Amino acid sequence: MRKFTVLLAVLIISALPIAVSAAMHEHGEHGKMEGMKHEGMMTEKGMIMLGDQTVEGVKAMAHLNDVKDAMAKMGMKETHHFMAAFVDTASGNPITEGTVAVKIKNPAGKESEPVKLPGMEGHFGADIVLPEKGEYLFKVGTKLPDGKTRQYEFKYTIK
Image (cartoon, rainbow, N blue to C red):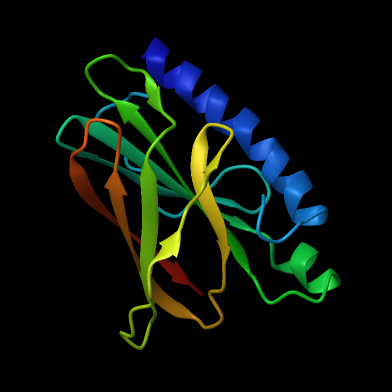
């Protein structure tokens, strides 16, 4: 429970720079409660928790941050910041190194090319475009420092 609280605090703190980064966007650079389900739950303004999954000893937590208004003010088409954070379930330590990408299947069933998620202050993330209403499927692929590849899936419906 303590590890979850610490991890949640790190995630919330690390999300603060995202809000600032969305407002000052420079393109190109930029815990542990088992069984808890929070898919689609809103946290701070615009932050959507997509849930968590554990695969081979690594727990992934995914979020979307609605950045459409800030991006539109700058003439950009991106609507959301997709982010994923990873934790080694054995140690409770965050994993901040590795290669992470997401493929997005839109409501019509068309899957995007992989979008690289660079490391960003405790999570991996990128700005993406979710232009239409309906259900999106996020397929997150990883190759983390242990050399294993893992895949996670998260869903979100835009109403």
